[in-house]
Length: 180
Length: 132
Image (cartoon, rainbow over all chains, first blue to last red):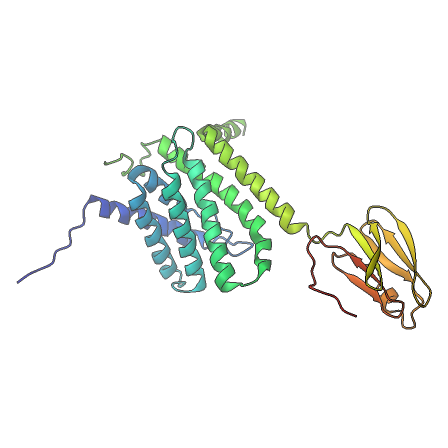
């Protein structure tokens, strides 16, 4: 008799742990009142960027997408419009990170990556909203608000990532030593 | 408190040269977007038309008056900073006068009997066409 055994390796456990942290941040963040739907700190992106810088794009993509599905499931938003906006933002963000992660690290640190990701997230959401949810040119009037939010939160999240990367011995983080 | 501030400022050392550049581009892009997307509602000129043809393009910077003669008589256009109105018109029903001050880009007051219209310009036309 054949049994199919799925063995979880170290990277699977790592992805699960990081995704859990990202999901927790997303759920906590949902409690923060927002003046406009879509203007959020995006704290889960801190985790995604950390994984990207420590373990590469592949694992970061797993964490980001697990976060989108699980956080929306927990919030009762799975397959609601907000979920698809979140998914579109994440996919754009991950695609942008795949392109920008190989920029010279000497000049472009976590803050650059965070800003790129934040703007890509916004662009993905706006494009999907424009073609699907609000098919009207008036939607672009919101662009400056989202752009300002992306600038501020991109900067803050990037600084947090830079700080966490610069201090590899943060006790709450057993994963801080790159394994590969 | 001072030590706190220094601590926050030290966080800026985490920014590398390229980060400053990206941040600057993000800020400039945001300001440019706000400028280009949010300014369309501020009119700059008042267009006076007689029989559909522009006879005057009045700047909304300073107060001014403009008289134009139509088939029924003289119509007086009054301009103040940021707004314009038809002050006097010989038309029988006075619709364009009662409309009062026009302040928004694209707003129109039409004195149909005298074949005169007053419109505040918009950078982008808010209407495809106007027929009367």
